[in-house]
Image 1: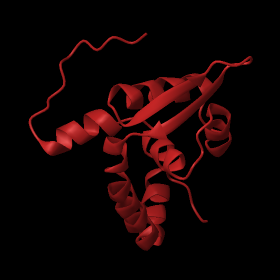
Image 2: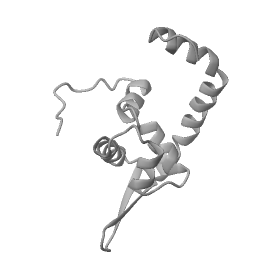
Image 3: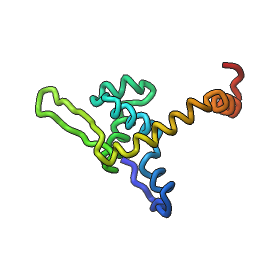
Image 4: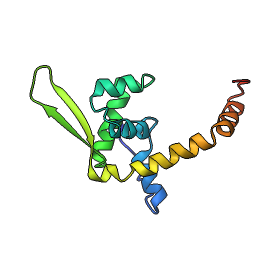
Length: 122
């Protein structure tokens, strides 16, 4: 497993947020868990571009940061469900605001992203 060699800079709220939410799929995972998609297989279907390994790593990090909890049911085969903690619920309005900003600025954001990638059209 990856072991961090540099201690993160945690001097302000933005540094703290970046440390907790940095990861390609973490914001989506939080949102989908909030919407009721709790099983790992459901989350995998919602984010098909992510590998199961990467999702598991990011779910573990969210759990370590007290944003989600993992419940393992003692059945065969094992059943696992994730849910937001009370602390995790507090980030949902922030994610919703970011999503609204993205929706409001969709055309401009798509344009600058495609330009940066040197892709024409769409």
